[in-house]
Amino acid sequence: MAKFFYKMQNILDIKLKLETQARNEYAIANATLAEEEEKLSELERRRQGYEERLEELYSDRLDLKEINETAQAVEIIKYHKRLQEENVRLARKKSEDAREKLKEAIKERKTHEKLKENAFEEFRIEIAAAESKEIDELVSYRHGQDDGSDPEYDNP
Image 1 (cartoon, rainbow, N blue to C red):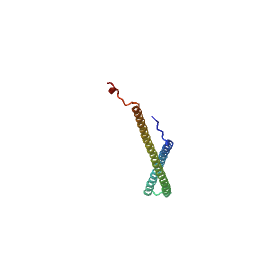
Image 2 (cartoon, rainbow, N blue to C red):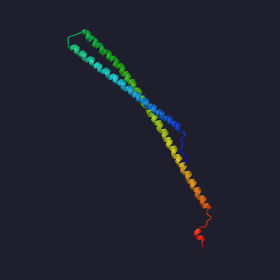
Image 3 (spheres, rainbow, N blue to C red):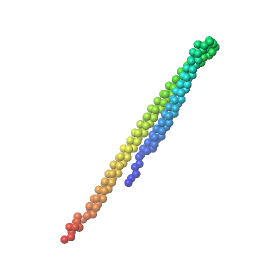
Image 4 (tube, one colour):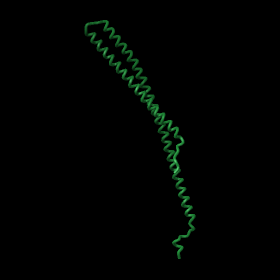
């Protein structure tokens, strides 16, 4: 029996590698997003801590120096939080872009796999047709070899 050979196997292999690469990029982008979100959460916790401390300072004996320092710390944290929110937004965009790239790579791979399946089905049909033709030729050859007489009926 003939062996199936897919002419575009190298393209399918490349598509598989591109899909793997896209999966890795997506994983990295998601890890980066998680990191940036964690940094944002930490900044939020710190801001809350400073604001709680500021509330304590307002209710205790008034220490203007410490109140000013804590108020400045709250403002600095708010500034860093805005910067971090932008970092999170950018990381989320990269993650979405990587996800779209992965979806496209999967789609292309599946398309090429379907083409390979179709080519294999055509190959199977061709093999079946060739086998059928060979059987027909063999039957025709054997039938042609017979001289038309049946040995059972030739004995008088």
